[in-house]
Length: 186
Length: 192
Length: 194
Image (cartoon, rainbow over all chains, first blue to last red; front, side, top):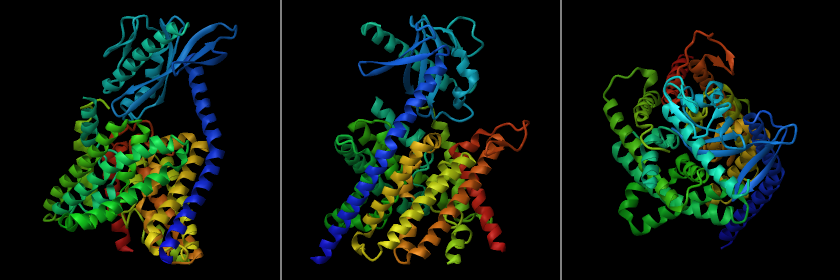
C-alpha cells in the first residue's frame, strides 16, 4: 500500500513540477514566437509588394488579407497566403496582387519541403521572379518552354509537378481572395 | 479518395522508415529474421493505430481545448507508454498465444520514434479524426512492409562474403539506402 | 571521471558504435549546421535529464521509473523546442518534427537506464556530456560529408569549387543511408586497427 502511494505521489509531483516549469517557459517564449511569425509575414508582404509603405490586416471569413498602401497612402495591392500539395508535402506561398486582381506583383515561398535541387528550386529567384508584374487576368499557366503569351510561367526542368503545384495554388488563392474581397466590400 | 491517397502516400511514397527515417532502431535491430520482423510490424501497427486515435482526441479536446499545447510532448509520450503497457497486459491475460509471439517486442515500441513521430505529424498536418486513424494504420503498414522487405534481403545476405568493416550495421544501412532509392520510384504517385 | 566522458566520444560512440539515435542522425544531417544544432540540442536534453534523474534516483520508485524518466525528458525537450522557436526560428523550422522527436531518441532513455539512474550526479554529468558530444560529433561528420558531396560546400563555405556539379541524391534519404553506412564501416576499420 505504501509502495503504491509513493508511486502515485512521485508521478503526481513530477507531473505538477513539469507542468509548472513548462507553463513558465511557454509564457516567456510564446510572445517572442508570435512576434517572429508576424515578422516573417511582414517581410514576405514587403517582398511580394515592393512599393509598399505600410499595410493593414483585414480578416474576411477567417482569411487574413494584407491590404498594402504606397507612400502616398493609396491602396496598391493585396497580399495573402495560399497553400496546397506539392510533390513532397505542403507548399505555402505569400502572393501579392494588384487591387484589381489582374496582375501578380510577386510571390514568396513561406514553406516547402520539395526535393532540394529539383522542386526546391521554386525557392530560387529564377523561378520566383517570373511572377513579378505577371499578367493574371485569366490566371497564370505553366509551359515547358520559354513563355510566349502573357500569364505564362516556365516550369523548372525536372520539377514540373512542383512548378504546376505553385501555379495551381496561386490560381486557387487568387480566385478565393478575389471572391472574398468582392463579397466583403473590397 | 483523399483517404486512399493518405494511405498510399504513407505506405509507399512517404514511407516512415525509408523517407522520414522514423523507426530506424527496430528496423536495424529486428530485421534479421522474418518471423521477428513480422511480429514487430504487427505489434507496432496495432499500437500506432490506437495512438493515432487517442492522441487525436487528446490534442483536440484537451490540449487545444484548454490552450495547453506546451504539454503536447509530455502527454503524447505518456499516452504511448501507457498504451504499450495496456496492450501488453491485455494480451498477456486474454490472448496468451499472441503474447508469446509479440510480447518481447512490445516494450521496445515506446521508444520507437515512428509512434511519437506519427502523433507529431498528425498534429502538424491538421488531420481530422478519420484521416488520423487511416494515417496511423497506414504508417504501421508501411513500417511492417519496410521491415519485411529488409528481413527478406538480410536472410539472403547471411550467406555472402561481406567485407569485414561492412558486416552488421554497414551492410544493413547500405541495403536500406538502395531500398530508399527503389522507393523513390513511387514518389509523385499520389498527391500529398 | 574522465573515462566516463571520453568513452562516449570514441569507444562507445552512440552513433558509430552503438548505432543508437538513428532517426535524427539520418534525417537532419543535410548540412553541417543542422547536424550541429541537433547534436547540441540533444546534448542539452541528455545532460539536463541526466542530472535531474541522477539527483532523484533514490526518490523514484522502480516500478514507475520509465514513466518518470519520460516525463522529465519530454519536459526538457519542450523547453528546448520553445527556446529554439523563439530565438533561432530558422533552425527550428529546418529541424521540424525531428526536434521534438529527441523525446524518443533511444540514446537518452538508454543512458538514464544504464547510467544516470544508478550513478551519482557528477559521474552522470560526465557520462551525459560525453555521450551528447559524441552524438554531436557523429552528426557533424555526417552533415559535413553530405553537404560536401551535395553542393561542394561545408558550412556554406565553398570547398570543391564551382566545377562541382551538385549531387542531389546526397540530401535525399538514400544518400543519408549510404553515407552513414560508409562512415560506420570506416569507423570500424580505423578503431579495429588502433
